[in-house]
Length: 175
Image (cartoon, rainbow, N blue to C red; front, top):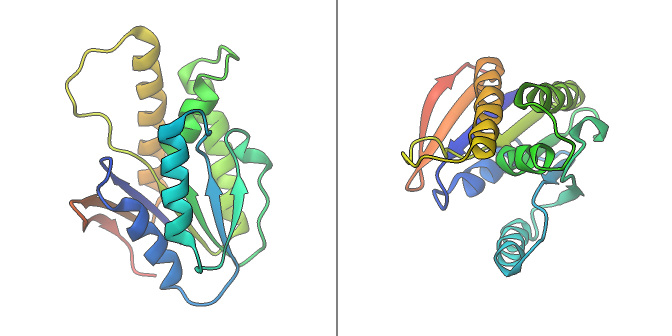
């Protein structure tokens, strides 16, 4: 099963995604952490997320870039947190890739990961509706993430948006 969870910052999407994993019962659990620790704010977010996962039996895999290299145990449950960070890390890595190139690389890694596990839950951010005019490079990042999010939504068994802690299903196939 493949689940995409989206929402704004602080919406409760991470807690909801973890609950999806925990509700599937005992099995090997992986948390793929994509955030790079660069400043005090990121340190605090990482600390908060680690506290949320404490005693939930997740094995954390750090993956700021290179999702295609991640390997997990067959039949496991995987939470990837979050696609927005992974995309930014890959896009702004200094490699000079075009938005579609980065999107294709990330999606290739995602599809490989999906084949390895029984349950894949991917968290992404809703960052497209603020109405702000951005510079060219930021618009290209948004294009890249938008392409990835659309591909994930199309392939997912379930797409849930979390708004103020309330999960709203936009797509849900019976599993």
